[in-house]
Amino acid sequence: MSAIAQDRAAAARSESGRLPANYRIPMAAALAIERIANALLRDLAFLLWPRKRPRSAARVCVYRIGNIGDMVCALPAIHAIRRAYPEAHLTLLTSPGLRGAAWTGELLEDLGWFDAIDVYHAEDIAGWRKLFAMARRLRARRFDVWIELPPALAPFRVMLRNLLLAGGTGVRWAGGWELATVRTGRQAQSESREFDDEVVRLLKITAALGIDGDDAAFPLALPARHHRRAEEILSTANLAGRRLIAIAPGAKRPTNRWPTERFIEVARRFAARGFGIAIIGGASERELCARVETGAGGDLAVNLAGRCSVPESCAVLARCDLLICNDSGVQHLAAAMGTRCVSIFAARDLGLRWRPHGSGHVAIRKWVPCHTCLLEVCPYDNRCVGLITVDEVAAAAERILRSASEPGSDGACASHTESEIRLRSA
Image (tube, rainbow, N blue to C red; front, side, top):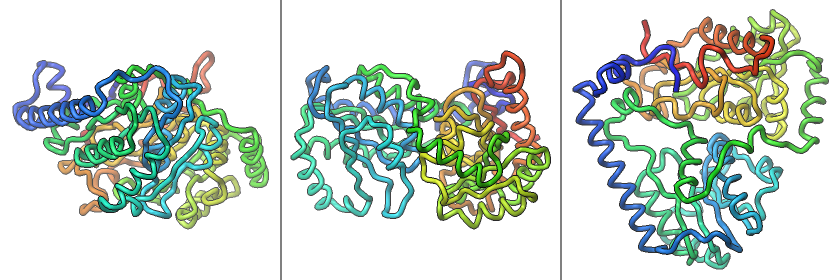
């Protein structure tokens, strides 16, 4: 991954070829835990399914859970599985988490890749008794192949549980379990390792199973009705034919939220230059997005929160020159539609592994002493994301807009290919 402002530790490593002394022990421990855990998962899977993966199968199950971003990032890997088994009855086993959580049901159905989508909620498998009941229900499906695409944060115990769940279904062959997050030495990992984005990570899992894939599923091919609906909404807001910038001020995790007043200032700046502002969000974010709409001033901003389905939001994003957002599922919808992003990242996770997939995006993240905390709520008032200024975000957006308008440009920013990392403040 290219970087404009590298972390000092990464720079030291690149110059000396060695990790800084204070990182060596935690990094060695993290790598050892990761290798041992994944070796145990592979060995157990081999004991249960010693044969090679069948090249043909009548019934295939793909197991992937998560919210909007998790599911969108898995689509290229799922597309690869669909191509590997073009004649199979393909079932997606999935869960958005607790009841009421947002997920991508209509979008998944529109793709036409699945013969069945089996949705459950976290409450449905709370406890071994419910888990065994689920295994019995799935056993009746008589799957030939089971492929798990595990969440990035899934701990070893969940991997083990899911492996045993697959075994309980009586499937002929199963695979895909790979631990991606080791919490030991996480700060050393963030400052010393380069992480694949989630799309690439999952494609590597399928490749290890002998299923080659790529991101040819992007941009997603939506049914025409969603594009028509998007144009109707924009026309009603008097934004038809106007250059658009999407802004998504929401995020599932409080730690990932850039201050709303800064989104308002960014929206105001671009609206003053004649850009239409499409404010994207879910139904629970209507009030938040309404604040941005009002704050942008004039009549060039429209609040679409709760007015669009997920596929319709994708169609709106496809019409936009770029998206400015937090680290949230919307950035992955935009990337899946070929729209470039300025993504504002907290320093809570390992590196920038949740950056949007593809070229031409800008991901901005600041260094703080408590980085890579993996917390859901910050005890320091979101200090890291608060260090990112309106001027920085506006300048990143300008670079994307300028590069897209240059003659002969494919829209990728000339200064970088994937992401801009700002890890240490001056």
